Image 1 (spheres, helix red, strand yellow):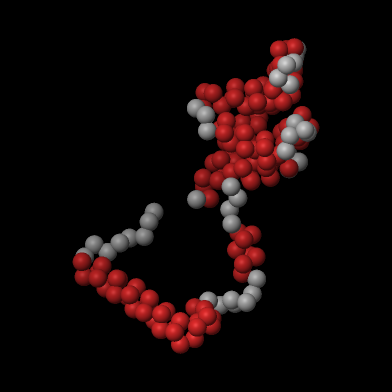
Image 2: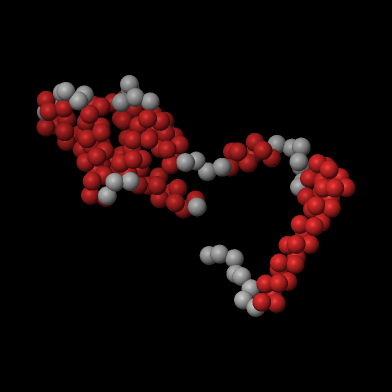
Amino acid sequence: MGKERPTQPQETLEGLLEHLEAARQLQKDWMNYGLDCVNLYFEDVDGDWWEKWAEEEPQSFVESVTAFLESNDWVAVRVRKQLENKSLSEIATKLETYLNFPEEDQLFAVKNLLASWFFGENNRNTSNEIDEIELLNLAVELLEKLVDIRETKQDEF
């Protein structure tokens, strides 16, 4: 859970004084060394820490869904094939929106989104029953993948 905080007023005061002294020392070092005081507090300032840090930043949900859609997973391949005229980031953004719907509405929202892109807005009612079943199965599989991605993202934080 979180860091335990001292419960005694004396302990709280001691902790506050330690932080105050550290801040005073930093200010003193800044006055004496200028920008070079950073070298006193951080190792390898001139190294590639910035690139490594940027690589370690967690992806957003939309970035994770986009990465999934770029993968070789059969669901991602099928979605890409069917939605080839849409950008993956646009698809991921819409899917994130639908995943925020109440659970009972998510499947039909994803299916309707895919149907509108599969068959076009005007031809939506002309699809045969087999296409609708395949579309529903794809929507179910895609929704399961999205839920897995969301749970993984929640575990990161």
